[in-house]
Amino acid sequence: MEEILQALALKQQLDNLRPINKEQEARIMQKFRLDWNYHSNNLEGNSLTYGETKALLFFNITAQGKPLKDHLEVTGHNEAINLVIDVVKGDYPLTQNFIRELHILVLKEPYQVDAQTPDGNPTKKWVQVGSYKTSPNHVQTKTGEMFYFATPEETPAKMADLMDWYAEKIEDADVNPILIAAEFHYKFITIHPFDDGNGRTARILMNFILMKFGYPPVIIKTEDKANYFAALQLADTGNVEAFVNYIAQNLVRSLEIMIAGANGESIEEPDDIDKEIALLEKKLIYFETNKVTKSKKVISLLINDFLHSFINKFISDISKFAKLYKEVDFSMSVGDDIFYSDVDEYNDKFSKDLLEINIFKRIDISFYFSNLRQIGFEDIDFSSALEIDFDINTYSLILNNDIDPISKKNYNLGITKNESDKIVWDEVKRHTAFIEQKISEKEKGQ
Image (cartoon, rainbow, N blue to C red; front, side):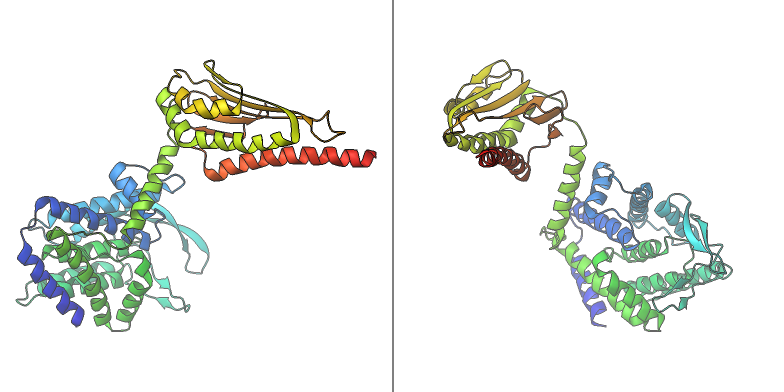
């Protein structure tokens, strides 16, 4: 069993590095705890992403549109992990009462799930927390066969047998915690003592045993779900060694992370950058929902970071129609303080003038094109106008004095390049369509 030998060698290497700096150890365990919470819940169908899980546990930020139950599962699971981290430091025994206590933390409160009556009709049943099952929880496999766990009547006795087995194994002189933890996990799953939450509880108990013997927790990653279940299914056929080896493989990864942390090296894994980006995305989404109040600083940042480039594009692209007309009147005003009567003046002064503005009310930009240069079209006029209104919590973009704004946003949300391009392009197309219509009318009138 190569994986177990490798894990034992790494454990000896880790022990040689102890005691680990407290800050380093806390950082390592924080990573394990976050990964453990996310992956163990996600394996069972929890909808919170890694970023949403971290935002919830670190910043108490909830995920919009996600079920309350999913949030409770993550916070409850985290409480169970914290309890395990705390009790492994002392001489706390593994008992049925402790297992039920962990289950209460994991599931938090009773809830209803879909079920079937003995004759196959759909129904609902309550999932109880901290109590062994009172109705069968067998599952149907992909082949249509029924996989049978312990019956409700058998469960108390089988759980007592499991506790006796564990108590005997840990007293062996040549005790191997990896074998005990992995086998305990598998034996617990075959009993399936609770209505729900058996997988999460099994993984917590497995890690409780490992951590009691100085090992780091094993994290079964959600992307490895197929291999995890395949190893369990092999154990169901009598090949428990395959499951033990699978657990040992994952323990090796945890040991390598902990050794790296103990040596002051990076403990980040290749996919951790994706997790951090997911967290930033979540925090930004949360930030979007919180309004920022209008102030000179806020609007100055908004203009410098987003609106200035949008305004530049609007003025630059709309100005291109000037070659088609004999006269073009341009004007731009910023509140009551600043007024520009030509594009060059705007280009020269706008950035500097922003520093002098104390109260931002609105920005008005208008083009009035008159007298097309083509003979016979001298009476053709066209106007384009952009208005940016600054309210208390939002700013609005209004085109051509329309009643409804084309965009209304909080101050912490800028105009994206795609939005900017579309707004300007739509106005260019409106102007183009106008001229084409006039040409068509002239052609029909000839």
